[in-house]
Image (tube, rainbow, N blue to C red; front, top):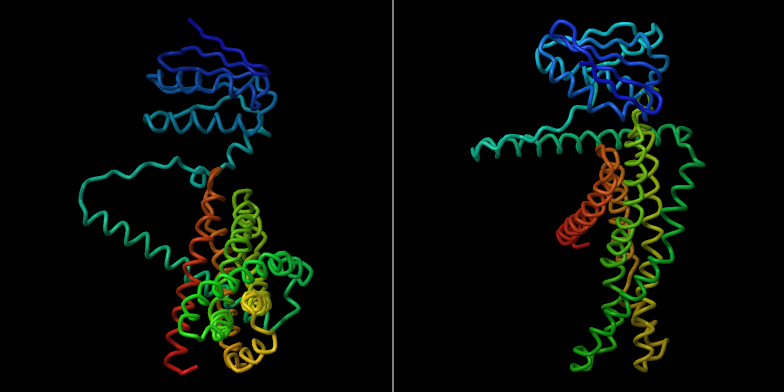
Length: 378
């Protein structure tokens, strides 16, 4: 007996004709109506023994949900070796339906079969890791080429947009960088003053704070703050654009997403990190000076110690590495944003990866510079 199911603005009628199931659609195939009989339509197709026919002669509107239903019925029939016969669809809807590229439709994720072979698992993991390294290498190469192109033609930089990025990543981060560095200098001074006072050399605490902040902690603290603040913001911003298919739109227009989105942000990171590092150095040393003054040392004595302890050589050592740290943090944030997948949690995952990878790179780059400076006696 024919089965009829109604929806707010469209109807589905299921009947049989010579062992074939006929799905008769009428009215408006919008989100509300299709949601009402989606399951019924697919269930009817599964009962078909001789194929399925979809009669759309009564359809006066077909939206995205309607096309999705037709594609779903077509794929379900194809999986069972049947052919879906589409009849009566208006020419304006049929033209759009025929243009849908089935190969580019997103397929549901199929869990990989675990066969218990550790060699297969190792090979699969190696292949995935190699693909990731290749993607990262391509990103670094294209970003470097974009920076070189800007060096040859600075007019290619959208200065207004770049300045907004600099303001968000640099100026807006100045307060938190100064606060964290000042407290770090105070903590080092408090912790070092007690053991050094046992040997009567607590005046040299300010030397320790100054060298630590200028050569190491100033650049590192600045880069870590940028990784947690600006790197994550870059990843979230570009990741949201990726989910909303704005990145795909740039590619369609012939624009490189890396050069259009990543290069200005990496350039901003290179520009603001040394400036913030200088403020971090000064704030950290100021924190140490405050602690030593509280312990009774005059400002003149502390100033003389700073002049004898810190040289321009030490300041340059910290500033040189800050350029590389800024480029790494900004680049990782952009790369993770461009790697964002689909789904509600994709942007959050990319942001988390950007922060973790950025902090890891900061430590690795600082360790590399420590070895280089040691070898060069710098």
